[in-house]
Image (cartoon, rainbow, N blue to C red; front, top):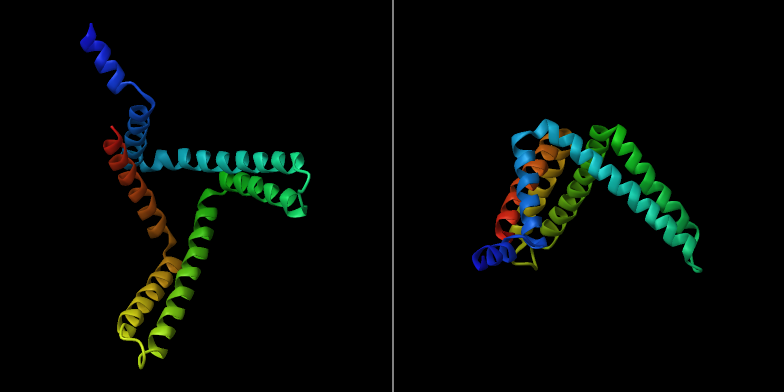
Length: 167
């Protein structure tokens, strides 16, 4: 009976349960990517709505709340509702915003690398890095689906790995 008790204590605990959930979620996303997108959408939308509600509740309870403390919760809740009904459009928009940020970062890094070639010994590295950032930004902007798919698959693989490490 002590063997069962030791086994129970070592394997049935919140940490092991969390690892099993990570493995199950990652495996589900890898095996059934179309079915898991609905679940991801529901979880993301629900999290945004709940976060907005909690932020609004916090603003009403605070004596020092300002106008933005009442505005931003409605933006979070609106984003959650919009994500629920227009998930693909939301992900595409966020990916394009990320692509523009990466491309701008690439232009700035490229400019700094070229401008500092006389004084900086790593100017060539910065120039190449800037070109890579710019190229990634352009590709992300024009092919956002590839980035979304890569993030989903990468997250699933990471979830399985982290779950296995936790267990």
